[in-house]
Image 1: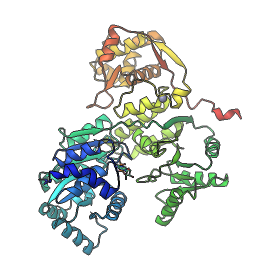
Image 2: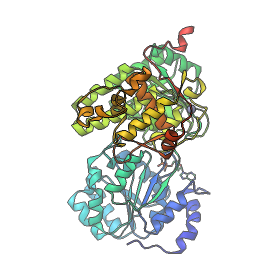
Image 3: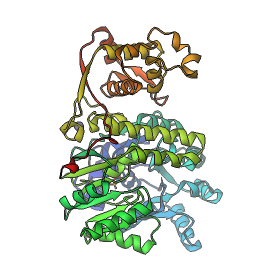
Image 4: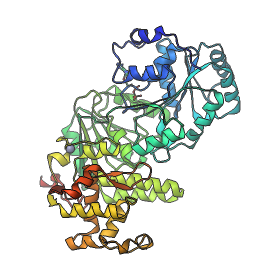
Length: 526
Ligand code: ADP
Ligand code: ZN
């Protein structure tokens, strides 16, 4: 069990200054550090750049023994180890790249208690020999970084992460601090269940990035639009994300011949070139880097002024992470996505070879992305809603707020949709609900005998299509009349607001969906 000298609590701030050079804790950092030092399981959900690392680094340093930090990527571990070593802290990582001598030094320092942080990938943790030595060591606590990797419902599931609980129990009775920058309510619950830390002290901060402007443009004449956009932002730092290495190369080339200082970055380049291109961007020898999502992990350039998704991302988690690299300094940050249904079909094709579970999950994630693009609702409300944060009002600082899509008024339609949710016992998703409303008879509808419900086919009386009902249901979910069931993906239930609405309805204004494949671009005018 963890041993902590009581005076530690009062001197934390001094140690923060002395070791890291910071004058103040940020946000919940101090409370989080107290929580883990007091031996509580602790769960931290904070956006990238909020300062999660410090939440386990500082307690590791002030505790007796060694903290085990589980991290999925060697590059991330190495970054942190180098940084801590530069601060004079003994931190090391354990993985298969180490020589026998290095390995022995790590083990010796752990066993004699001089090592403060031991970074390890879950794969190495499962190895018998590593486990045996950890059992003999004095371990202060276990930190699980990028904890969303535990959840199959997230966007980068790593099966070995699901073994962590068993291994930790094997090492001893240790407090666990789990940290992640992305967790929808479902993923959050999955992590807590799997780590058996439903009782954990939870610290979740807002995901709202107020200085980021979100915008989606139809992917028509996208290259022309892109060049124009980058030229309008001449001299500013930007990242352009593309799906394939080939497109990365192509776009970097295209920008270069158009007098934009741009370089490519993707995993297919040799390490020297990658390093060189990354440094060129960080040192501002070039303005723009065209990259696959391999670029950005651990990149901390505060003045990136725009992030462009030339191709649509696979999930809103990815989109949030990638756009999050803009405006880290709190100043201007523009997030532009080029969107076309063709791109979505391409992404769907990639999913074909996956296992059933993986494919279903990928489909859900992509479906959420498609809704985000198509709905005329404030982007920020959608994005934050996705991560379980409810916003009462539109943000006024996204394309859907600034250039609103055409609106329409509804009231009886909303009552009908809410009644459909009730009559189907609050156990179905948007597609099924719209099938019932439009009397689309399929095996699900008939097997649940929903074709015998009072609401069956009632949606047709309004002369409206399935698309209309899907859009309406999604919009009233964002506006808080319905909510997603945390246990069952996609299933909708009434909220108190929804209940009240049925009793006492009033006119609501909703937005028409975008139609990106048929819209003229605003660039066409010149
Ligand atoms: P995260 O892991 O949440 O993405 P990091 O731990 O990498 O974030 O921290 C982001 C940046 O904030 C780093 O440059 C870090 O040194 C800095 N930072 C963390 N805590 C503080 C603090 N209390 N005061 C000032 N800077 C901090
Ligand atoms: Zn908005």
